Length: 446
Ligand SMILES: Cc1cc2nc3c(=O)[nH]c(=O)nc-3n(C[C@H](O)[C@H](O)[C@H](O)COP(=O)(O)O)c2cc1C
Ligand code: SF4
Ligand code: SF4
Image 1: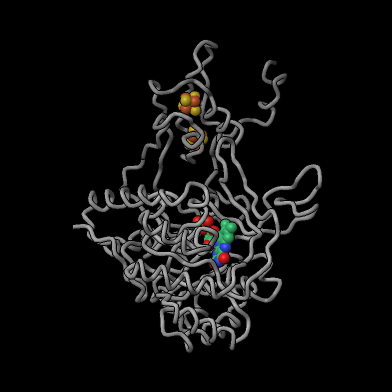
Image 2: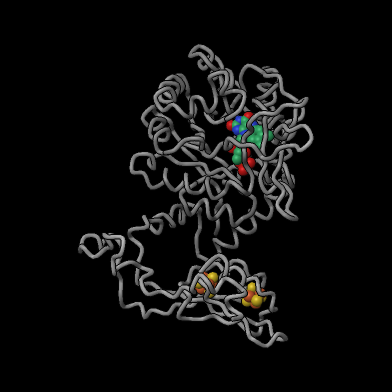
């Protein structure tokens, strides 16, 4: 019997699908609509001293036929009065007592933190999330990512908050930093009950070719924004992994955020250690209804694998994420083309000849465009299988017999690594490369 409910640092919710603090959580109306649709929790649009926003606020990276592959915003925290938000938090909790309503907060002074924590607790918030991530506007005023980038300041504020709060505290981290474990550890040392990440990545998504200003253009000028959406998922997952593998940081639960759109994204974040997930851009793009696919897919995955709760598989990918030096240098794959599936587009040939290892040849017969792999040249880099437009047409086939295993780390310990510029132990020593003059058509024809 599958049970999707979560207890995240003491915050209970019927499922791990939460809305991230952003426009979809701007009002009680939206959050109640989302809960009706199936979301288990929501982090309210960040509360603080209400702001004044600019118009417009969003930019996007459209890639080929995909709209909003990356999304960019220069919106600030809530522009609605605190009293309105508090009244609506109270109302939402009356209708949905078992759902998680978390108040995202961002204020400046210790006194303001103490006051706003009391306010949201009185309104019935189940938890607090500290917004130390906003990389535009608020950071210019010493808040948001200005705090997230300074572990010592972050720790002090977490201490103020945890001292004042009676509900669990989640610290939301900024990805705009070299080592995410620095603010992560500072938050844990400051007493945070949980972490969430990522907030948006500092970005410029494009330049308008008439006004020469970055998007979104505000009266002829622009500013850096915060990047999110499907494009940031790999960065978010990497940072999640760094936190979840850290012995001290991993003692607190982590809510995963960044580019989550489908059930598969949800499962991947859980496999990397998240025990709730938050979504913003995908809901702004497609609406609250996406949670139905997420839930159905998650349930099916759990059924197939025999899991009852998400805790049965949370973090299961972590032991397999290792450092490069621990990978098996004896593992060998090469590309194989399924001649029956191949449509003869030759994208693989071009990619391998120009961008990889000249390991694909075209037949001399101009009427036959089906390429073949030159096995002895193929290093198994994967490029051709990634560019091939036909699913499962190029597969990577293992050629070693699995009996040998040696890593760079082991070779270093054995004094068996290249140390001079012309060392015989270099990986590419003796590997085929064409003569430079083979590139010249004239030389070839001669
Ligand atoms: C328009 C917009 C406004 C946002 N406002 C907030 C905010 O007020 N507080 C906050 O913590 N994060 C805010 N975020 C960041 C999101 O909560 C989330 O961390 C980020 O968008 C990554 O998730 P996604 O890829 O699902 O969008 C905002 C994001 C967007 C796009
Ligand atoms: S795997 Fe790499 S080297 Fe081998 S054929 Fe494909 S692109 Fe070329
Ligand atoms: S990219 Fe795929 S379909 Fe196109 S020629 Fe190569 S193997 Fe065939």
